[in-house]
Image (cartoon, rainbow, N blue to C red; front, side, top):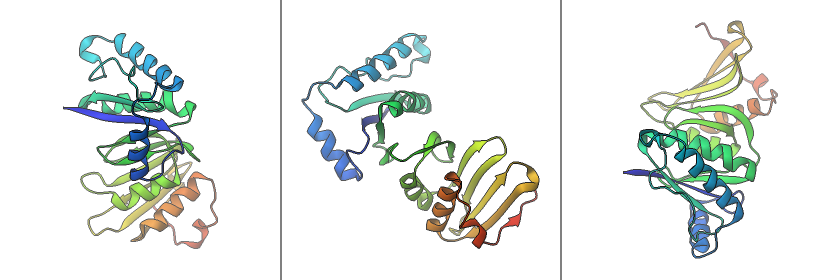
Length: 214
């Protein structure tokens, strides 16, 4: 069984219904230049690997009449590798990534480059407010956490426990600058993580942060 991922231009859809309508409307249209360029690079990198390490489930990618959309598939053990390549190639071309299995639209509009780890889905190269609103209320076992890192010793992370409450922590450069708080409100967690990503600490000062001993 393969895992599907789809590229589409940033901003053409904001809801899953709009994604479906856009992709349907692209069927039968000539392949757009950015799609052809991305597909060619994917095919080049895939062909350069030994067969046992190939990441495309059904090569070659592209070459179909899907307009400005690109459909690609990988085996399950190559999901993260292919997704990282898609971000590398698509984000500079202002393309979004749609994951139909998770029903996630990951659009780079307004993004902040950060190293993001989603406990259930792996690594991502940027954060948006829309992703926080999508991800945080749905964090669930067995790995209900999210981490965003700006650099060594500069990160913010949250963990949702079995009661639905969130532990939120941030480290500001060293272990003695590591603080935490708790809240049941995912919207507040999203606000604070987004504030941290934008280097806006105004809202932080209204909360009771406690030193975290590790």
